[in-house]
Length: 211
Image (cartoon, rainbow, N blue to C red; front, side, top):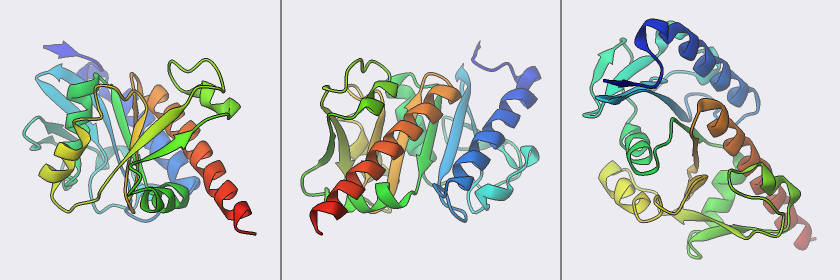
């Protein structure tokens, strides 16, 4: 059994996930019951610690969290499994991520919709890009993929898969929001913060060009 966060020490990572969720909620990136967040507890057999579906993310407590297996079944906790658990599992399997965060910010929601036909949002020339794993210069061109939204998780997973081997930061779902991930929960939160900042910049640039 390969443990990432030993289950007998699980309270610590549970508290960290709650604190992360509250910070994201305070920034209005997961208003109401929006967004979903996971941390890998074990890789074999795979176990994800997750925020449950249908719960106000600003009011989550440690005891609200659930543990989900590879079959998207709850093995610990009493909450409801998010339909988007399949996406978290796909990201973890394909990238080796240790945490996956999904936000519903205004910038990510708008830009993913307006760039749906293009298929990506391009980030280039911004110093903050260097906060992303493997990016060492503002001159790097980063294309964040945009996939079409669907209520079918099977369709969404299929849309994610072609992008995951080459992606180390995130994917946008049109009219929906941003998925970001990292080796650790802290890395995932940093990637989400940086991408949300850059998307906000892009949205403000688009607005200024319309003046």
